Length: 260
Ligand code: SAH
Image (cartoon, rainbow, N blue to C red):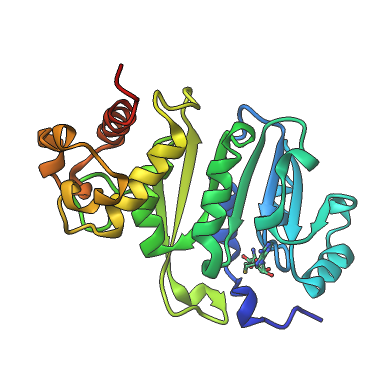
């Protein structure tokens, strides 16, 4: 018996063993001894992870998949977390560094990435399969249409690398879109040299109206007319690098400090 694919859980099961091996091989395996796979399904990727030198854990929301894994992958015993990754507090399960991998459910893949960024102190490496367009956006550099919130917030904390494309025809059932596999490696510096909450707010607000200049899109932040004369506000967000956004955040933070 195999698991019946459920659309609402984003279930598209990988059928190509070679690709499963390539994804498992995308983790460097250095700097951690534990790995958490999100959404193992029937364990096509898990079986190869279990052959590596690290300890593999999985988190799976689907009861039917959990029953399948319990029956077919006895090596996983006691290392199956049944639940929603988006609600998981990694520190409740892992005292030490843990890499994250998966062939992610595409309906929540950006949310998975944001949860990882929030919990980056525990996650030195993150690899896996996304919808191709999302994978590209995460890795994109400034100046292109695909460069946006996902690119800046990820690249603030991780080095990104686009590894390879995956056709939609190696899944059962095939998704509507092609896929891409990426790897993120955490930067040495885990903290930004600016107020991180404000940085997130500036990036999100700027890209909400990505065709406008920052002077217009950031109006809601209540900037002084003095600050708005700075030439950085003539730019559109897609031209700003991570460090430009850091500098912008510092300027905005200084601007709202009470004057003596
Ligand atoms: N890795 C498997 C399955 C990929 S489909 C393969 O490559 O074949 C995506 C998987 O994520 C499914 O097993 C689905 O049940 C699981 N999933 C969906 N939402 C989840 C969530 N919020 N937390 C954990 N797992 C989830």
